[in-house]
Amino acid sequence: MINGSEYPLQNIFSAAFIYEIPSFQRPYAWKEDNAGELFDDLFNFWNDNKANNEQYFLGSIVLEKQPHSPQAIVIDGQQRLTTLTILFSVMASKFPAGSTDRASFSALINEPGGLARQAQPRLSIREKDNHFFKIYIQDINIDALVKLDPNTQDTEAKTNIIKNAKVLLERVNNNLQTPADIKNFGVFLVTRCFLVTVSTPTTQSAFRIFSVLNTRGMDLLVTDILKSDIISVIDEDKRDDYNRTWEDKENEIGRTEFIELFNVIRMIKLKTKARENLLDEFNKKILPKPSSDDAEKFINEFITPYSQAMLFVKVDKPNEALRWLNRLDNSDWVPVAMSYYAKFTDYLRSSNNPEFFKKLERLAAYMLALSFGTNDRIERYAKVLEDIEKASDGKNFGTNIELTAQEKKDFIAALNSDIYLMWSPRRKYLILRLDSFMSAGGAQYNPSVFSIEHVLPQTVNAGSSWEALWPNVSERDRWLNKIGNLAPLERRLNSKAKNFDFARKKSDYFFKNGATSYILTNELMSINSWTPQVVEDRQKRLIKIYCDNWELN
Image (cartoon, rainbow, N blue to C red; front, side):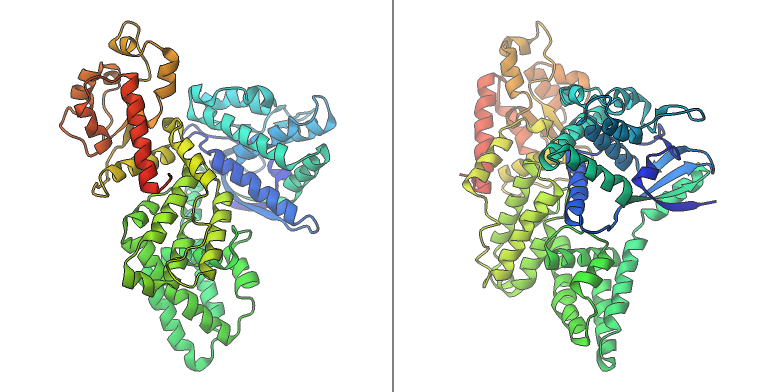
């Protein structure tokens, strides 16, 4: 038996549900970008719709749950439920202990109990992190939580909880200026924000539902509906030809990519993050009640050229900049690249000039290094799209794809910072990109296992040669996690070898099986002693390589 219902958050966080994250689930994994994006989306929707009662849809969660029992095993939805709980705790912390307002937010986090109900937290996360979550989030000790060092925690989940609480506290402080603002935003959250719960009494069927909901079928259906709406209004004598064109382009790039094509077109046309589902935005804002001419124009000016642009950008990837853009952990840059290609196809074919894409990759890398969230990235890319629309030829890109003098300084500062402590996809991109600069684009990266290793080890044992070379603890701390002390490897080796002295570490750890695939690591062969001066000089040289190749000087 499967039950599906749509509930406002005041029902999701009520006595009707007591959530448990099972041990087989991955730990709480949302990063600062995810938490910040969730708040921004909620706040912007609330701020834009204060005059009406439009509802905000937060997606669905899948539960293993018996009817008439509040106990619910969370199969899908852990990240949203946990992050919303952190947000409620942050908002509660803005009110004095014992106040009615604080109690109202606390009641969303903890079941107060009563004569017939037991007092308990509404959400239990994985056992290893649950006590931490209770004492800081569910007991509303946000002031103490944000003082903790996230990098010294024993689990990634605790690190993420601290960082996300800091991000959400900053967002609340910056956007909700008064207690009344916090209360009003809270009312919006619990009454106008909805989740769909899909529940079933067995684990097996819950996982089957989860699998179905995470296929592309529902999204791909959107393009089928749009096709029907658009093709049907074309004059009958042309309809078959346009239907054939539509299907040819869909087959050419594949059905999965075809749905992405429509998301790209949506971004190019509206230049904002999606606020509604794709179908509604097309029907309301892009092609509302199209005529035959509108439908023909859409297929001729968007479906046909942008299908070709997607092949160029995502499949052919004919230049190094595009190949690296496709390695990013986000695809927000894709509408910009496709828009440029679609408009200046003839120029690109005649000149084979990748300058635009080189500048786009630099901009994307800058936003990656400085931890831009999705909304900030989209805002910047929207300005670049506007410049492309205004451009008269393929050589003039406008100003928004360029980095200002201050942005270049900020980029260099980020590259000079503790790269190792960055989020894994971020540090991996920046380190591999540096290695590619050193190989002049000749290196190929497809490691089965990729690791970033410290040359000066993270733990310096008393009496070791490392202590003799690096007696100053603060100097060790300064250089430990910077690019000058890091080396990539295509394998993960015995952790004990990480503390060997430099000579043995080179022979038994870095180069046991000969040279590696990475120039950054191979250059260690020629270094005899790993001293603070060597690391400082290497840091300066590597930063200069970044600056020369990304034109940051």
